[in-house]
Image (cartoon, rainbow, N blue to C red; front, side, top):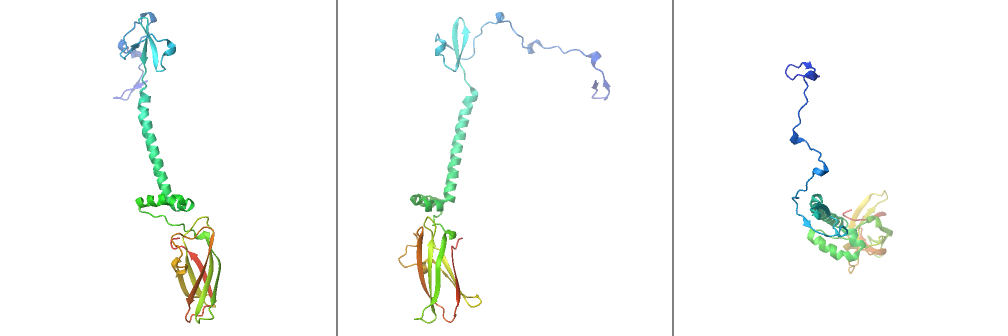
Length: 242
């Protein structure tokens, strides 16, 4: 049943059906083997009497006038895929280098701390990127092992702060800042002072070299309290950029 596109009426097409004649030129006839005549190949051929055992893997024999003829097969897919594969290899290698450079930049401080021999190369690397390779600043690996604040009997309105610091890391770290807060009986802050490394370290201490790994450092500071009369204190260490 078919519906007309103009009048939209359905009708049976079988009484008027006529099979479509096939153009002989469009058919692909099956030829008998006896009727097949050898035709010259448009591809370049090479005549050879070479035995079959010596033929290359990329050649196939064709019978022609009683003589074996070998045609070299070219695989277009392989030919096109090789440059593309090479480009992907180069792109992947460049991407790997980019990721490696980014990882070195992100972890340059840790690398320099754990592998000191790499630090000169990392410094040169940072000269290109205009960055720096500072010492690690892990406050959690620093501790105040002990501290004491006491009066100086020989000097009125002067107190002495004694403390022992320890770097518990397995690598050198930057010296921390110390914050001292003096308090009264109600634990209210009377005065506060921040001591930078240059304030509490000995004059000959190599500050850029950092606090050596697994080492202790004793400090002693004499302070003038004037008329504050503190009875307590709080002492903490920290890094300004933490």
